[in-house]
Image (cartoon, rainbow, N blue to C red; front, side):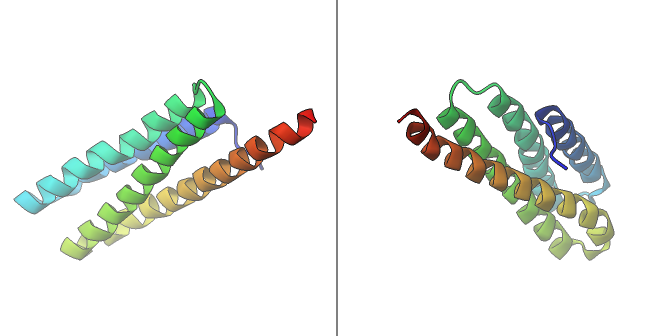
Length: 127
């Protein structure tokens, strides 16, 4: 079942909200403050950049913004791994967030590939 841009926007936004709320469970400490800050920046950035991609001015602009989404999702996944290394008790909270990030990342990577293929084929259609 294909997801619409609006559905994906909402899914990314909901995931980002869940990630930010999850960071409230972190213990106090400098190391967790740093990780919290990273996750609070990169998760919403993925959602915001997908929204911007949907308003892209051109196909290259759309692809560039999707690449940012890809990077932010991957970075979020790194921080999930990092936080569970620091605090294994948070693993059960991380698992669904990590799984959703991985699914979203797969969707974005597929969208990038599909868009690039369409872009490469476009000149051939005009011939």
